[in-house]
Image (cartoon, rainbow, N blue to C red; front, side):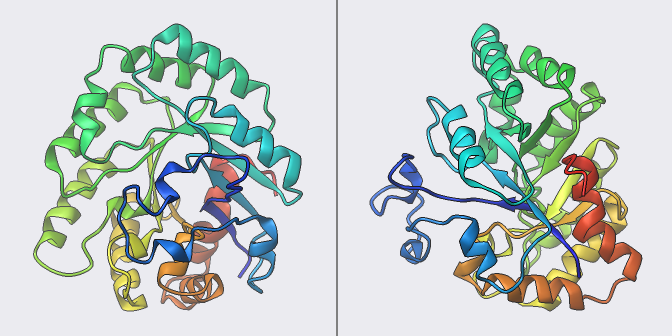
Length: 284
């Protein structure tokens, strides 16, 4: 199966900060040492499951000067790729505009990310956020974030923003943390349908290990089918979250699992390649 991986992270700990990777800093994952090393494109090539291209999502390289991460990538990566850069939606608009001007000069940048998690309502109600979102829309940048769809207030705030910024392409990471087991799945499913009513919202089927380290492909199949039913097969993307995928399984096993899902061939091609190629403008 030909695929584009629209969610990976590469690390160079000598050049970048990566405060979240340091053993004594949150998140306090007991298995954090698994990924606390450098990763570059050779680690992808060594998996025996090479993507046709990828999208690098900011990884805390330098949140004070986030363009440095993109400059490092563009100087070292030779595979086809695009970048989602770091941004703070609450920054003063002048500062935000200056950062966008830097990003516009970097060939790989197609969008930005601000992780919301449980701060979605506060961030989206901040007085600077609306102006900065308009700036993103003006430059036709993608906006990426992550929330838990079990958080009704976050879903409501994000859905309202998506409706107000209908020209802005929004991509949500990691299935909005679908509960793989338990009663919360029903709540997640209903809230996900609320998000899907906005045609400009897309979602990545990824980050399974962030919910449950020992997940199985039956759970992946169930959640992916629910996402396709809610969003349609042109707004869902298979992705990895490499190298955090290594918490659960080797990279190639994840993509083999996607390939083996019981889905129409056309649907698998869209989720694995076409949607990422179109949204991130890879031109492959």
